[in-house]
Image (cartoon, rainbow, N blue to C red):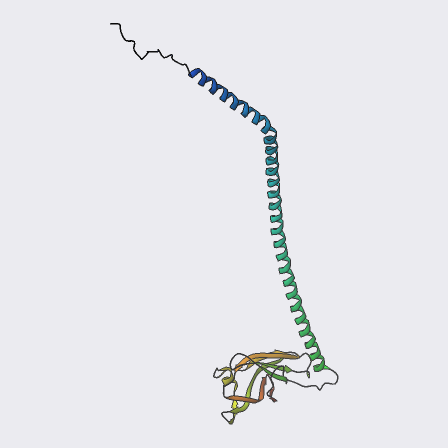
Length: 238
């Protein structure tokens, strides 16, 4: 009996070599990348050089601006110091001018007073109390100014001590407050004076809180003369 042919046929599979194709594709891809990079470099080279130049120019401008800013800052500092010095100097000058004006005004007042004192129409007097004024201070304190004069013996020096007492009303009754109580120092001596033509004696006294002054009696004890003069209570600048 003849053999029955098999329905299956054995076919030998041929090996395919795919790796050369892969190598070729990879090479082509790498070549394209290289060409693209080279092309991009050629296209970007002018722009990159321009950008680099601009960056360097900007850096130089920034450095120049920083130097300029530093110079302006130093100049501003110098001007500020100079302005302060000028303002201080101007303030000192204004203060000095004000002081000189006050000195000139005081000298003019002294000259006018001296002219009235020794003028041809003025009566010649020896040691004399010219005026008495009081100005309020802090609390119960009062500042006094007693002006003494003499024009009888020109060139002579008048020396001695001055004191005064206040007459007025205290607790509804007439009262006198003496020099020691006014100065709050028992046994206090009078204020010394020494002048050729006139002298202004100034100081501060304390008035009792319940005392209202009405008159001032000024007592002068000179080397060879004693003077007592009374004045109405007078507040300065009133």
